[in-house]
Image: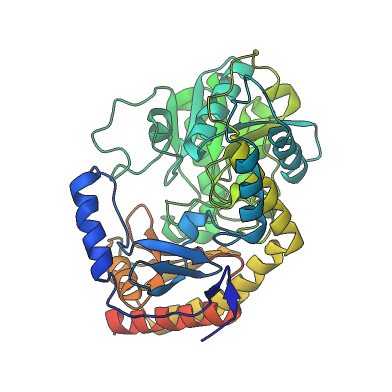
Length: 445
């Protein structure tokens, strides 16, 4: 099926070789010989171009993209505004370090984030390089402002691969295994995970909230807690949407106890769930919000945005970094945000949800192995009932062989997750879902 072109790439799937093809296999042999084996590869089809909903590999195969580089290319790969802004900035200068000789684009990104993130209170923003770095700095800010040291995170959470963020992350393999000891004063509480809640989804919100407050009060002590950190939809944990009302109650309780609420919107942010940020769906206003991934159309940039009195409590020089808020990445971010607004990518995410949920629900009705379909906007998932990675891995591999990029996730590795670019055409989206249908039929029938 053809849906026009994007960045000169015809928006259709083309398979000229097996996947991966011979040139990709040659490059992968070089990768194995040159790159540390701890750096994994989901689909070793080596990329030369990408645009819209298509990724082109070195063998001239055109693959449909249901991954967006893990929710990064929300505006599509090589989005025209982003490309133009990056080229113009590279012509001017590539780096000075904002802490040495600053530039307007850093300030402009901060202004846009202060405006777009939830809440109408006065805000401040600091820019960094990666999601993990943003989370590290959010914790630093919370501890400094409150004078407390403990941080509370949830089961199934993922917050990064640095030492502190590994401590916040719940899953051992592959993220934490044999990398400890980890940063201290991190405490874990149950997540309101409706599908896997022992007594069922109807009681999930109430029981999870009771377990959360009891754990914090008894095992940690509320007066010792600087912050609670939570993803409004858990990403690597399996696109877990918390039971309705749970996060609102957590936010209210934190406010009453003088505990800051850090909301990690690194995967959920920038139109991905059908609104600018997933916090809006949950009716919560974070004290601090961390963003990255979709912020800059594929360039490395991250941010912490928060209440002015919290952000400004840190002494001068306490925040920053050599590359944080790099001018090229800032130019890309401003262009990406312009694209999201001009093309109504929140609306696009909702349209993707409408199309995909219907098809995923049909798969769930047809195959007993499917436990749950869930998510919001263009952040959707299928969880298999069996808590092992076998089925999700096999279906994903079948998709890869036939030209559809898919990802797995979940604490048990049993979740297929879907993150198509928000600019993907309807015909291409439907063709990808047809491939997914065939993969289910091949593996599960």
